[in-house]
Amino acid sequence: MSEQLAYYLSFPFVRYAIIVGVLVALSSSLLGVVLVLKRFSYIGSGLSHVAFGTYAIAMILGFMNDMILVMPLTVIIAILLLRSKQINIKGDASIAMVSISALAIGYFLMNVFSESANISADVCSTLFGSTSILTLTKVDVIMSIVMAISVILVFVFFYHRIFSITFDEEYANASGIKVNGFNTAFSIITAVVIVLAMNLVGSLLITGLIIFPALTAMRLFHSFLRVVIATTIISVVGAFLGMLMAILVSSPVGSTIVIMYLLFFFIGYFISKFGGE
Amino acid sequence: MSEIECKKLIIGYNGTPLCEPIDLIVEQGQYLFIIGENGSGKSSFIKTLTGLLPRIDGQITYSIPHQRLGYVSQKHQVYTDFPATSFEVIQSGGLYKLKKSPFYKKEDKKAVRELMASLKISHLAEKSFHHLSGGQKQRVLIARALMTTDRLLILDEPINGLDPTTRREVYDMLKELHQKGITIIMVSHDHEAAYQYGTHILTFESGKYRHMVNENLIEDEKEVVTCRSN
Figure 1 (tube, rainbow over the protein chains, first blue to last red):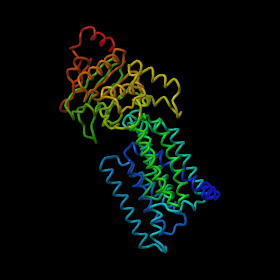
Figure 2 (figure 1 turned 180 degrees about the vertical axis):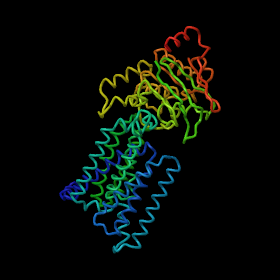
Figure 3 (figure 1 turned 30 degrees about the horizontal axis):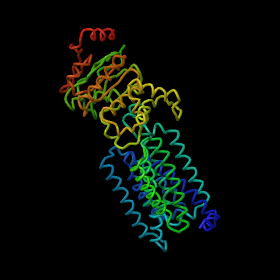
Figure 4 (figure 1 turned 180 degrees about the horizontal axis):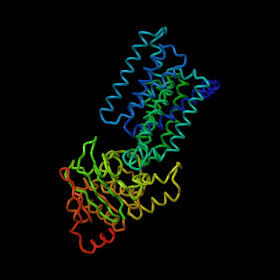
């Protein structure tokens, strides 16, 4: 088995895939800490559906590079969604409405206008991520590295402000933090990470990358700092093992990582039952 | 010296005033209780003071930047299952100390520990905030406010939902802080406490307000108030 693994790892595209996978998982999980705590878990899947819709549009318009259209459109919708003042049922419903509409319109357009020979394969890979992860170029790898480093830097430099805003937005506001500016910046980063993560796991499984590590860490620890650190470790280890497994048994990358996360979650759950902090 | 001075201040939502124009001076060392019916404008008034609610018209002058007021808000049910230790919560009150740096300095952390010791809550430091009792939470939130300010506390119904013994503990804590020279402004439904502890009382009722000195204070406490007013 280790020989087989060494054989696969001798291909550069496999190594690229692992690097990108781990970095995307890491960035998504860090955002996940905030999204879960702000009760925004659903935003991940909502935005990924939006990205699916914009992908469909880019595809039928024949954009050579999808990102040019997908990225800005998703970012704009993310800002509108995350900044909507009411984060209660109304906010929830608006996210569901926008995301399902995007999904429906995207699928409709793909079927009616696409010239591709195999529409269902296109749709399937956009939804579940499939093998596209193994066709990454150097540019994709560099983009993921840049993105992951930016997300980590934002977390390190604004760690205490992020804590304050996530814990108590009103108090942060009263102490003069520009909460609206922060929320906008945060929406943009989330949208960028989600669009990039779509390559890896597809739009249906992104929520898994976002919420699982944070939820597992929250089972184990009751301090914000420890939760953040544990989240990064869980996401990196989980994504790495998930990708190795996906390569070995040639399973889809996205679902394998999410299943690995699920396993971690149950382990975390049992540890918290019998000990833990 | 005055901590807060309101001139012809009009409070309300979306341009609709809740009360007649307010002229009010809060002097250093006062313990001002704000009482009145629900919806009379008590909470809106202090939200306006903290800058959370834009004022419709008029002026507010502060002795310190209004971002440095110590505010304890009414709702803390929003924090359920949030992973945060009491230490982390209290430390977040000192956010202004960060300036441009991403991390707190050693002396900032020391200040948190000293504050916790002086409020007798050191034992809560590593405890998860959402596992604390109502009274403990309130004390931690007051401590957070004291990280932000060293002179002016503004509290919105801090004893709501607490049992009588815990209420007393919170009142005792505030009394002690007041005796140390901290000015306190507090919205409350508890009229009895207002006359027992407050040096001044502000009442909101059907669009009018009334500001008065608490005549029930025992003589030597009254003297303290007048001395500080000068």
